[in-house]
Length: 223
Image 1 (tube, rainbow, N blue to C red):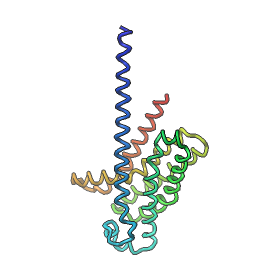
Image 2: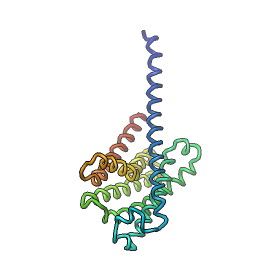
Image 3: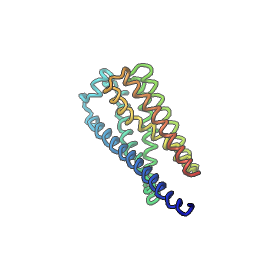
Image 4: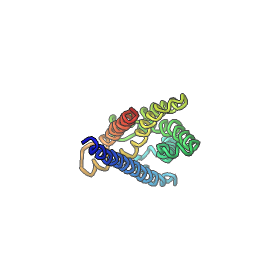
């Protein structure tokens, strides 16, 4: 019975591995497509015209130079952040071309800490959704700041295990720009009240939970 049972374990392990790879491919493929869509939708902002829908709904804010500068810095930083982020999770890139990984890592950290977070925190003070909407964006911003800095500090200390864990958390917060739009549109289609504020907090909490699950799974795999 022992001899007969051994071959039965191999297909199950192979199937589990194929399933994991399939989910991984689906996840990163989806994130790549959504990131590309978000970047594409951001391109009209760089025409610097005032008749872009998002700017039209902001009314008098668009005429304030500080807000306008903060907006363009936030958008530009977000584009760099999203472009740099996804390749950083490629094991093949890290193994074969570590210098490219390093350059992309610096681009990600600089765009987040130098552009996305400072401008985003300022813009959060004028966000829709009242107190809870603004507080939600501030929570995402400060969490993105902290997790990105911790990831950068850990890699400088050559603590690569915790570096990756913190950068997973960082990307989860950066990707809230994507998940917020998905949740918001879904809630809007379902005619759920307060869909804007709910979308903000769902993107924050769900992304944070997914990040912790991924980190926990990696620890379990190493064990």
